[in-house]
Length: 490
Image (cartoon, rainbow, N blue to C red; front, side, top):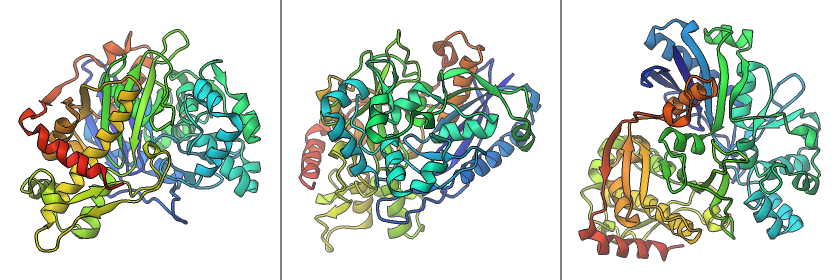
């Protein structure tokens, strides 16, 4: 008996197959092998064709089936992890009306600010736990005001994971967790926020039916099952945004626990046992995967847009792809703490929530052509990414969340010993790396949704810890000095 998980990112789609009994991943794959295209028709825009997600899902799934050699009938449940805050509009034939407006698109900031002024800060924070900002609701308002024909054609407005669930099952639905990440959910009244919709002038009919995060939504649509080479009896039993899902994948389910990622964007995600908010909405709070009215579990999400995207930009644009990431890490380690005074600010991938939705842009500062080398640039970039994490974690401390233990998957920026040691040294937190991934986590989530596991703790029992990184207290002053110099640049 096997479980299948899909992780729909903005760079690639990953698939992992998990043995339900041993909870071990037996095969995994991703597609495409190069990053998926993000279209920016105007500055600050970021769009993707949802059909591209589906095509790459099929490719990754095919590779997993070929690698594993298992019988498709033995796959009993599917789970979905997906890039958060996106907007997909579908018509009554389930066709996509326009390209998806994805998470890093910043066009709707002004729309969110308009809604904030109309609703008032007190209502937004007490009911939505966030300002509408640049989330899905604000993006939907942008479409309504700027592309009224597309808005009028729309049967439903859905998130990327809802779209994939639709392609798998033929049914359109969403979740409370999904609605909360779009700022559609009223935590105080435990329902869809009709006040927000009325403020935006949006008919509530555009919001699809709401299902629990863990449940048997439906079995595979026959046409989808045929295209994927799977059984029509396979159930779709779980979906959640990539950051709540990543936290779950690392066993972060209870108050005081935190998870982090450093892929295209960077995230610190901690769990609270009560609704909470940052008064400036720089750190955002949403319903965690195990949130219910009786079991309040809130995920506090710190997001930095420009993390791995800065690292890949250095490799692609400055190094012209002539150096591997492994070689970059090796060269960076030859530069001293503080990169000989060089400082890099990574905020070059759109507006930053933790900077109150300002777009400061990225920058390389204090460069001296006589003393600085490419190894200093690489080190300063990785330090700048770690410093941006710490800047946001300082905000989380002001909310009452002191992060002393960070769990992460052994992937992306955490493959760099320099990056993870810098983060540990500046934050003062211990970092634990685990051998898991978000697609495998989604698969186990589906196992719980299908009733195979009695609890989420059972589903994630036996996670393999690879290593722990402790702060180097003897270097505390050097890193603090470098961090303080970095903060002066924006």
